[in-house]
Length: 329
Image (tube, rainbow, N blue to C red):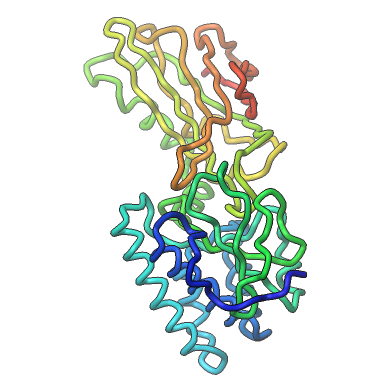
């Protein structure tokens, strides 16, 4: 185990190039790790994380607000100060023009809730606010002090760890709720034909992705679950004008697992003879603050897809970390 050293170092720049913002997040991580040094406080936080369900990412201020309501005798004042620091940091993130000025609490993909529940020690790590390709180490805190040796960016630690990082999804709760409860069949036709002129007869096909598998999600351990989405591009033959449709797959979180997305689902787009015979499908993993990673590229001829069965998409180029099946109805 890495021994804790002194508390927040003055010269830290682990949260990106903005020194002040970096230091604010370090203070939050140190204070949260100090709060979690008490067993009863760990129990309160972990019970709220468990109540959040299968999601591994939680809005930090929301979960701490709930915990504070139950921690009158075991750290309520400490949490109030911590939440004030979080609010000030998120204001600074907004001033820095970050896309999503919010801090999230992340449980890394290989970290099981049982490990967190049964441990007497929890690390609070910080996801650096820089391009993941440049990250070599991850700062972490225990009992209010920074570890003398940072964690590896390539391999999750053996000690149970939670991570504070910049949000990568606008609203976690609503996205996951929508993924569970939306009426796919009812929404698909309106979604797919939204760009069809009202004067035109709505006759044509719906083409979409009923199944997807990710072999490499391009998401490091300290950022939790990936944020997978696809962009589908269609060209109108007569004008060459194209339109992009973006669809987020909030529940596609594990590598080497086939996900059935439904038939139909939000990825189904309207196509007829006015459109080019080829469409472009790009599978992305959303990243903040650096650019999104391309996970897979597909350019199928939709007019050749069979009815009444799924057709395997053929990945192009060197980016072949996704597999999809296509459906034509």
